[in-house]
Image (cartoon, rainbow, N blue to C red; front, side, top):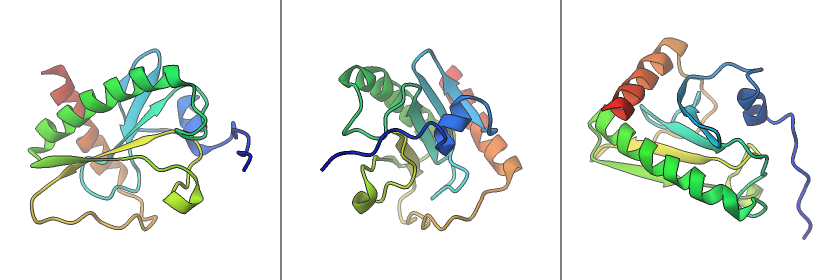
Length: 143
């Protein structure tokens, strides 16, 4: 089955261009990490390559090294910054998998023993909470 073309107006492309505000925690020449506005738990962060790819299935393989290097860096920082017991890493491809934004992205979610993930209901987190959570991650990245 042929894949749909990359949509340059998807929400993550707009965030990357600065057209939509985000609480960024990390950025380099290839990757940006920012807070998920509909988090499944405190500290839920998205790691996104700057290169346009719908998902893992159509991404240039050269995207993966820089992307997953940052995923690991952010995972360590969210675990430290939130005192988490573990970290869940998720990545979805195509509608049947649960992908809803068609720009390659990886979810990094700090996890706590006995605490389930909240459903991805579409409820937006308060901006001040996202800002506080982003600061915890940025501080952990600096240590």
